[in-house]
Length: 311
Image 1 (spheres, rainbow, N blue to C red):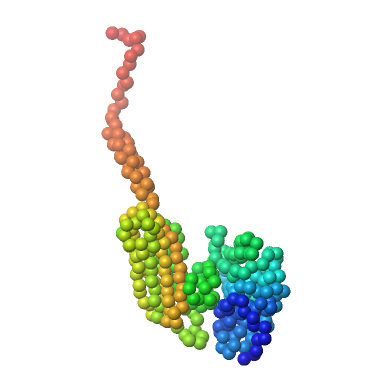
Image 2: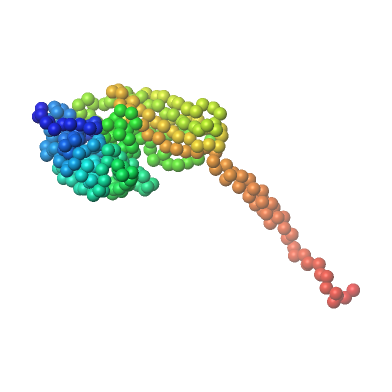
């Protein structure tokens, strides 16, 4: 193991396969402005790192798969700000960087999610000046690429995409209004990380329906299941009997205690007015149809009130 002399940390490390060799790496930013990548196998420095910025790095480094649609990218991209006023996007295998001059400093980790409602992944940078920047990328959004908080909810500081995680499928997370007695939630458990410990099963999954205060029943409707292998699964949840909104939260804990989650919102009985519309329109259409069917078959002259008639 090679010694690291300037390893003065301000924030914690992040984990991921930076160089694409199949092994976990540990990314460590330092107060001196250096960003180290350490091998998770023996702690040695992964070359060509460290990468040197020209200011202190005061936040955790975001790890992203920034491969475009249809492109197979080897390794990850390191995204961070530095006290030199730049946003850095460092290619993991080569340590070549693209920089954006934001002219401000930040103590916060750069976050990633779909912010503007499109299908791309956005980067969110908040600064000490009170500004929040949103940078779009050409990378398609995926729930496992999103990094919404420093610890991703609880205790996970590792990149999830093509590694391990849980996400709700697009068919389930798309906005909808539920009116029946039950509805289905489909999610997928991903576990592609095999080195060195293999599968992280069993996966303890808890699905929770959260409803607001205008519902008189339980505020949290929970279901718990344990799965032994990755894949797509469906869980049936009951609808609530009032006109309200709700949130479905799907949480997973693997055998090592790592926590993963995803959520989406929906409504219940909000579109009842559509039924009222048909209740008004259908009787009118029915009466119109009856009048058309029962109309006189032979022409009947209209009564005339003309005074120029022969009596």
